[in-house]
Image 1: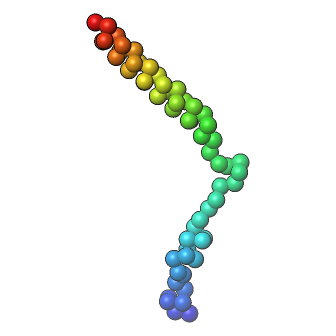
Image 2 (image 1 turned 180 degrees about the vertical axis):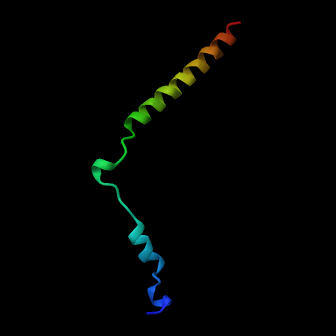
Image 3 (image 1 turned 90 degrees about the vertical axis):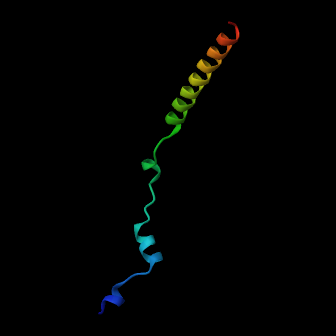
Length: 57
């Protein structure tokens, strides 16, 4: 067989390289989202605290 016959089209290669995670292998992002929200709430809380403090001067 020649080299041309061995070549695969792009969809065939994509099908072979596509991997789907099993249900138990999927990353859990709930904790990450929670910590991010807490962090953002702290940033906004400090910003509001400083803003109010500067208004009262």
